[in-house]
Image 1 (cartoon, rainbow, N blue to C red):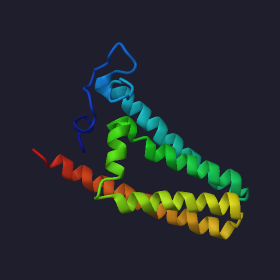
Image 2: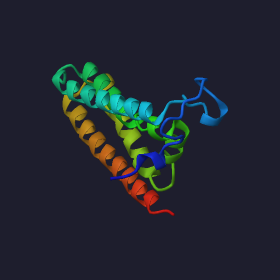
Image 3: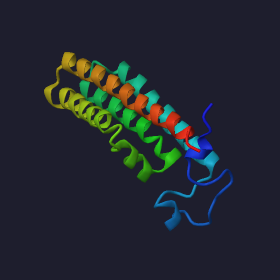
Image 4: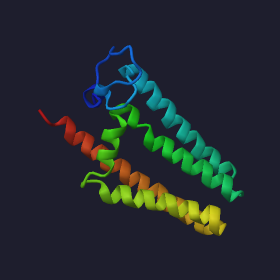
Length: 152
């Protein structure tokens, strides 16, 4: 099991008196446990939104909004673990730049198909591409995390 405490800024019981300070790079000064709870809540919330989107698939606008919001929540949840600045730096790092670009492009294409074109078949294809791009992006993150753990 990976030791997430090595990847997160701050310690186990760290909590500053101020909500924001210069040392946290504009990120809320949350303890390790609070960040893990926030990560889990956002990730589970995103997953629930993605599942609920399947229920309302016959209404493309509701489907696209729920599915995309779920994806953004799930991907953005890792900002609680590593911080938003490092999240953006890692997303646009040269090792996962293509995966990030393809994923964001698929999100935009899925929204266009659902909200503008209103074609259910194209929306399904765009969502399948979005899921595959999300898997590719997640695999690139896992690969980097495993490499990070091997550093001295």
